[in-house]
Length: 282
Image (cartoon, rainbow, N blue to C red; front, side):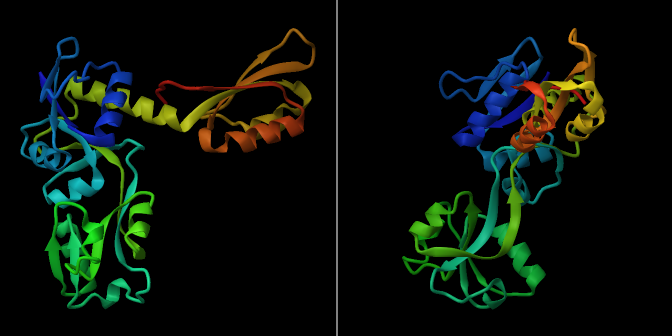
């Protein structure tokens, strides 16, 4: 029996449960349970505060877990990033009042409010800057208005909250974050149950980046069509009953699909169909 930690609340929790469910695991909670036992797959899913997951995994109490890169780094423990999951993207940045001309190199002696003191301390050390770090548990963006801090360092997604608080981002992000599968020094990634789980998750993550495009094309232009849709190794090609025509099938990056369809149409493709891929193994 292995233990997998999932975030206990928020969108990170919802997306993690959805991912595990798509991978064939039973981990849905019906109330506020801390444990969900998946008997079929011999896994105990443990729901923990996202900030605590890295600590439990690092100490070998939990085999693997899902948390954000920002939270994993803030924990300052020994961990490995096993798999980036493609959701929960954010940036950890400094922000100052909108009218301010401050940059991160001007922070000497200033008060910096944050919920991530370790990340900030490490970044300031790299810059050889000494500042007063004010640790807060939440609502960091209001600290400047209330006079608690001169600068904040916080996780930014859309940036709307900062704008509403009269702040702006300065400098490059301290860290770019997303949801991760993490393991610790005591984790055996070769253990069958863990290995299977990671491969299932990897298949879904990769599948979310691609779509399957199918179309009919004149055989005389096949090389040009294959250049547009080369697939992973090569496209699948099958003859049609209509002489001189073939059916082509290939995986394409989802973000490029509209441009690909434009090119295929220009070349004379017919019956272009695009479908989502639930999971895959490449």
